[in-house]
Image (cartoon, rainbow, N blue to C red; front, side):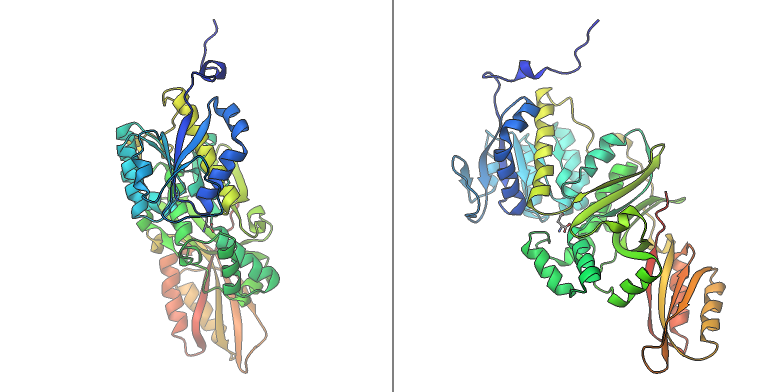
Amino acid sequence: MFLAFWTPISSISGDDVKPVSVGIVGLGTVGGGALNLLRDNAAEISRRTGRDIRITHVGARRENPRYDLSGIKVSRDIMAVVNDAEIDIVVEVIGGTTTARDVVMQAIANGKHVVTANKALLAEFGNEIFAAAEEKGVYVAFEAAVAGGVPIIKVLREGLAANHVEWLAGIINGTGNFILTEMREKGRDFYDVLKEAQELGYAEADPTFDVEGIDAAHKLTILASLAFGIPLQFKKAYTEGITKLTREDVSYAEELGFRIKHLGIARRAENGIELRVHPTLIPAERLIANVNGVKNAVLVQSAPVGATLYYGSGAGAGPTASAVVADIVDVVRALNTQGSGFVPHLAFQPGALADTPILPMDEVLTSYYLRLTANDRPGVLADVTRILSEHGISIEAILQKPAHEAGSVPVILLTKRVQEKKMNQAILKMEALDDIIGKVVRIRMENLDA
Ligand code: HSE
């Protein structure tokens, strides 16, 4: 017997099928990109959805002459879009967590589906937003919130749905990766590259979100929830940026066969889940170590599939619009089946989320790159290695560089895995030694060996 599992397009397309009306709130890089993409690829997209998609209303506080809005209603009051009875899907791309939160909550209350690229909003208020959407029977889609054009949300929610995720590690801020790459490859100045990233539309409105790791922590929070089936817990993420990295450490890392990448790491450990963003030394031969420029990549280790790697552009108009429009397509396809095609917001059924604790950074186990500046005297290294051994820290490699200032030498140490708390105690003891000058530089190290 033949069973029809889906409604054939031929039965839902045609003159009798009402087009889906989309309202866009925000007309910056992402909103404008989505508008252009829906127009440019309209024919192909409706072949995929079986239904026309029309942008009928745009809410933008200011004019943006870069985009052609002919035939579209434009409101300066952005809530007019959310309250427009004709609109089926509200695309929220204004960013931030204040007005955007009102827009999303009001859209849900009005029974509209939402597509958003707003990682900060979801990382901070996603639990409340998804609960409201589930209650109302509408969907909040957010592929563009993480890794731009890389469909990592769909991967974790659907492609890897049979697997047990052990850990994931991602380069999930394009601006930061662009800065690190330009500094390493061309010796460019940090702020000069940041300015270029802003001009190219990669950076957040407040670029400290990029360089201090906040943006990456927002995205990591979302990925961890999807990977492990836990509520969103942004406040518990450990966040360290790239502003303190020096060219010296970048080049010592290279010499030792490593690259420094700004990673978001989420891992199931024995007592809980690690959720951390920080610069990380990784072996130069790993594929992810060679992800450069504005590109993002997420490496997922899960069982039984093993390691899988997802790569692509993480920021900018085209890649982000690609994800926004893919979400619109998903919502429209689900509308074709009266919403029966929606997958749970956080991949796991809302009632099945786990209360596994997020580990405080002190309890995380990792290995370390340490750089000390030591007086060039006999016995200094013996003191340093004694302190490490007293804290149960094993040394993997030790390297003394030629003196760069009269009487002092840089010493590089690579350690084996140890609890962060023990490393912090050892660093304090090393810094208290008379022959150690200034602060000890510490960069965490991950093998990312699947
Ligand atoms: N500022 C973000 C980045 C934009 O650079 O990755 C994409 O989320």
